[in-house]
Amino acid sequence: MIVKHELPKLPYSYNALEPYIDAKTMEIHYTKHHQAYIDKLNAVLEKYPELQKKKVEDLLKNLNSVPEDIRTLVRNHGGGHLNHSLWWLTLKKDTKFSGDIAKSIVKKFSSFEEFKKQFSAAALGIFGSGWAWLVTDKKGNLTILTTPNQDSPICNGYNPILGIDMWEHSFYLKWGPNKQGYVESFFNIINWDQVNKNIKIIK
Image (tube, rainbow, N blue to C red; front, side, top):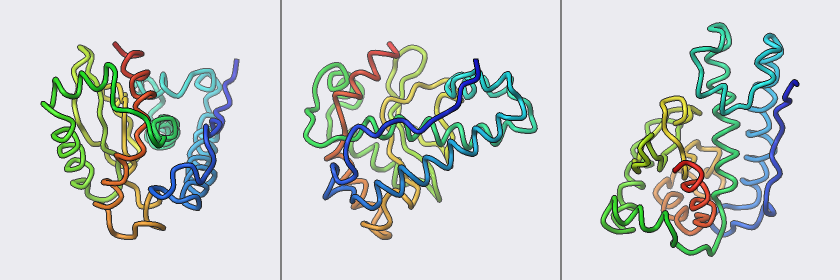
């Protein structure tokens, strides 16, 4: 059965994350940027109908099995699709830092503030465009890492449970060159309920 990759339904309105992320940025980011990754991924896969049967996660986890002539395009556009699909779900105001993820973060980083410090430093240290991530490895250990462009951590065997998009289209309309303000605001809109679901899925 051929799988046509589609834009997932946004679980809130465009203005739901204000004042931290403005409605116009959300609308453009979701309907233009994410949709473009999906459209380009579908177009690339038309050349290999057998790959149209696979989920984007499976394509990225097994990139070496993707034909070389489209491998980079699948990594770029498939990664853009997967990264944003996770991103939307992990954004929400007024959720509580609690549960398994809270215990795991405090155990790994000693405190939430130390986690915030290290995660922020990773995000602000990205040169150009990319993502900062909180991931787990195959043993379930938490790690902060960054990926360039739209690369997904799953390409390298990690499971992303929380990320921040550091491409300029994510913040520039509201924050301009003030990346630090954008990163600081991000901690007000982390959907810890969803992050807890993510960490339970990958245990």
